[in-house]
Image 1: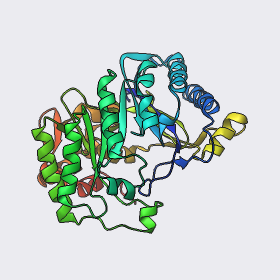
Image 2: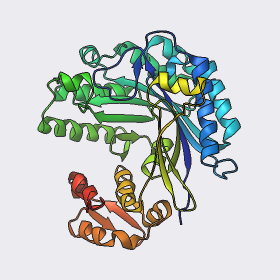
Image 3: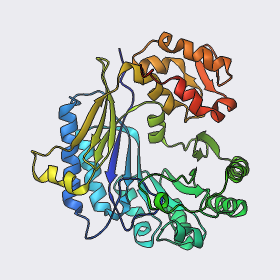
Image 4: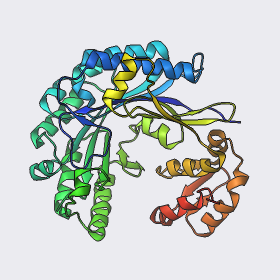
Length: 390
């Protein structure tokens, strides 16, 4: 029997000014004006169909968090975001302390809207800085400059948000150790409550994949991470997940719900969802990916928003659970495994024994903790929890 966990909502806004060469997200460069009003109507109708399909009316869970991602959500006006949030709350009641995050670019026009987003209910903004070095920003296809990034962070401080995040990348094309650490120091000087500091990876179906740039080698990447981690720690940031650092009390609650194997609805083009039910089912959903197809579902109800729906089999749940939990630095409560997968610990006991013997995991009576060795051999550890193909 499952105990349905916290419920969050992800909202996808698919448009951006231009597609970055490293981006494998479901984003589409603008070729005309955003159909803002129609898309928000479609998002709310998409939510209605999920509520009906999964019988969420009367669900006692209040909405834990909302994350509006993209694309570039800050291309939507504050009035539009306000209408969206009011429509969501009319359908699913919010927790009193709900975290509502919205991704934004540090471009001048978007930053000028920050105060408007706060006024309509956004509590947290995630600013996609990526780098402060002009040459690196150009290589990454970013359309803002260093000064805009600095001003956006300063504005985020001034308008009274509960929190804000800076997204920063390292391991950039031809990036030296000194350049990577200078970028990090520039971010730290701006004192964001939360800093997402992650390594650039080359993903399929991106421009960088077809025309690979020269990236730092593994030794250089390790030096960047090790020295950068020291700088962040010295500045009072605590690493709570693989790429997430925050000042105490400013962890991203939405991401924590993901990594703790929580539930989330996904609305918007190509969005993903995961829902758990008291009868033991866990369902993963994906919505229609392309904006044209998604809006066609709104214009013609014979075309559904839902692209795929898949039951998570019992044999796949241990891998899915630990694939998420092992992103987090915090110890994993043993009780969470059974509560969120519906499985007894006995089904994974042989694998746990092996992982502890290999010094990949340590345990107490109530918790498991991935070790430093386990982090180095994370793929081996996760593969041990995968279902046998036979």
